[in-house]
Length: 286
Image 1 (cartoon, helix red, strand yellow):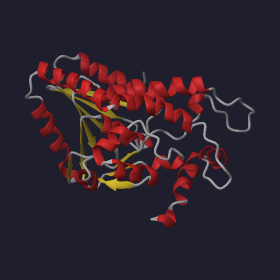
Image 2 (cartoon, one colour):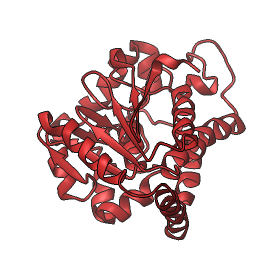
Image 3 (cartoon, one colour):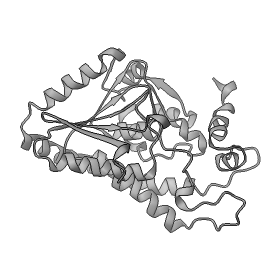
Image 4 (cartoon, helix red, strand yellow):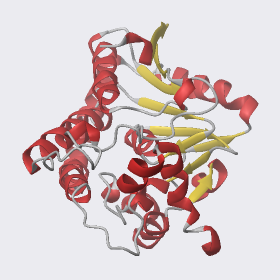
């Protein structure tokens, strides 16, 4: 495990896990999903830890998954090397590891997790935050699901979670349009617990975490265990399974000539140009 991708700190009964890839706006690789799970395990196994804070270093929380590795993680070629298309079994195994083992671990962690959100919190970054027990964000934080514009069109491991949180109509709007919204708007729709001025974020998160730590250890873990049962009844854990299958299906899309193909654009123009080209199609729709 590459320790530099995360900073793990203990202060009293609080474990703080900081995503530490500021040069890439904390974009997460598939390997980092598994590393985060390992960091959570450290906190779970430390009997003195009662609460976990997950935050990002640098200008933002997390912009989502690193689009430079999307597809390649399955064994995609560059489109010119005559490589065979990756098999469904390789795609499924890879996506299962990310969404069921990693995202599922965040959702079902035995210790409560507070997502401390500032700056960008987009697509996979927002999914990670939503898997946490609480989201406390700055009022001007930039949240949303722009990655859906790559072709997901509403396929998401947190679809069920999002429907329960903001309602089915709003969930469809956010995903189908790939809309962004700020922390204050996120609080108004029920996705963010508290939205505060940027200079008050750390103070507010610490206050909430310390309040949680007043609870007894057994009570906290029993409550999280009971929450897992509730998630099962609500179908939130099943949503992780549906999410990884949906992600695998998405990576096997056939794009038509009048549609935006990120993999093709990345091959021809590089990941940065391919990324920005995704949103240029929507400029007239704002």
